[in-house]
Length: 319
Length: 246
Ligand SMILES: Cc1cc2nc3c(=O)[nH]c(=O)nc-3n(C[C@H](O)[C@H](O)[C@H](O)COP(=O)(O)OP(=O)(O)OC[C@H]3O[C@@H](n4cnc5c(N)ncnc54)[C@H](O)[C@@H]3O)c2cc1C
Ligand SMILES: Nc1ncnc2c1ncn2[C@@H]1O[C@H](COP(=O)(O)O)[C@@H](O)[C@H]1O
Image (tube, rainbow over all chains, first blue to last red; front, side, top):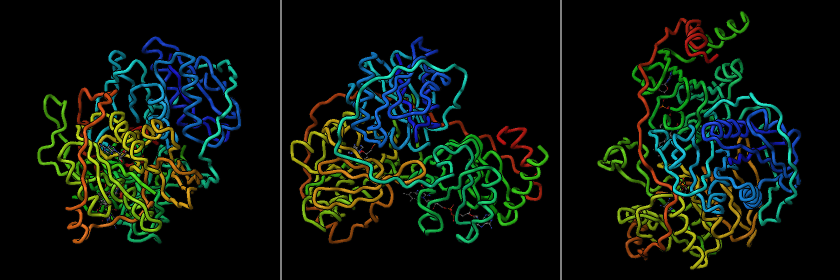
């Protein structure tokens, strides 16, 4: 069977969790296996895992799982995996997921591939593709052990709400005491975090200075987009570091990436070139970014961006 | 405090990626190799700062063949006290992690620092595996670390924010941007590195659990569709009707 560990936040299933479930369901259909979900900690509606593909939700409701700890979580995930006889364990490629993949794999003596974006191409030998060299290539990995552990890259597939609520099996497995504890969480409220964003508006040195970000934020507003930036922009303190995308920043794959005043250096492209559609706005028609773009506008961003924002507003008003 | 810092060799960020032998092997021809930036800029430097503040020892460990010596020497030039190179071609995260954990345990290190991910295989897996083998806490994506006696306060990057975690020595940490400021080796460091111990050791022989069967290059984008800067209505139409994205 396939066990999907479904991440939650404040008791709600995360988008990354829905994506992992959808991946699990599709793999289950392809491989003729069953797919069960595991939810850790208090959750408002664990049966919803069924809507996204699980036949059963296993719920360990102990509040000890509210703060994340890689050891505590690994204990619970592997306990359930062994009990259920899971041959595939699916996690999300999130900050927490990345702390778990290696741990869960070692505990289960399993091979693991993190950050997969496609379904396995075959089950025997278990073969699955993932990006390598920071988006510059793909590698087809074979897992050589009876159990496989995978983590699913954000935005790699659309969650599909095609099923029905699943029966919930409550399991007693209290969180074990651990040597690390979360003492504080500072979250920027109201903004979709970059790795989950489906639309990203990103600015580079072409904007000339932090005081000019207003036009970019207006565009992001009408698109309900998350803002990002190139590395020198973050390094100069024009924008916060968590907005830095690229090979040494965050790697993203939104449906739409709009690059404004960014030249398209290879290290920048490495983090964004798996976006589904790329729009580049740059005054230099020779900017390397145009080679990686689907749509391009050669022009002065200070004129083009407000025009684009107005055009989108107009189109939204027209319905 | 004895700190073990894991450093890996990766292609330079500007390297052109290609493959040989029927796309089963990475073509290293003409590729420059560097120390993985997260390992060099953040994990190593934070370890050195801790040593400078409270004494101790910083050892770098790299799992790789003789061509790794260049990055290991650089780590020594930046300030590590000594180095271990486990003489094997690294083929998967598990077999690498098993070697690192083995040395952490047998030589009684208090802390193991790694980069948050290697920029070649982008696994973000080795750190968690080392932690699991050692049965230590693992704090990933750390961008701030304060150590007070044996109590550590760590900020880690999570989606949309920062989480502050408290833990105690021993633990494993993976380093993200901001954990420290990059250091450039100076002449004195480079000279001293030549006499610092670089111990080449044999692997324990733990087997890989995954292998790469084949590589593929992404499809080239078909050429860009240019839209006139005066006609943003057209761009919106294309995004709506052609790309079906708005
Ligand atoms: C090891 C290493 C790792 C790196 N990692 C990253 C990374 O993760 N992410 C990253 O982004 N970079 C990274 N870099 C840096 C990268 O090489 C580039 O230097 C950087 O991406 C350039 O940023 P930029 O495009 O904002 O600035 P620039 O290269 O200066 O480009 C500015 C662009 O704005 C355009 N422009 C200027 N004015 C206007 C205007 N009025 N209207 C329209 N267009 C205008 C210009 O034509 C130009 O193309 C890394 C570098 C190294 C060495
Ligand atoms: N061959 C290696 N030798 C030593 N350390 C490594 C090796 N490969 C990976 N690491 C460490 O593990 C971290 C994460 O790598 P990865 O799991 O491959 O993304 C890197 O930043 C290094 O600190």
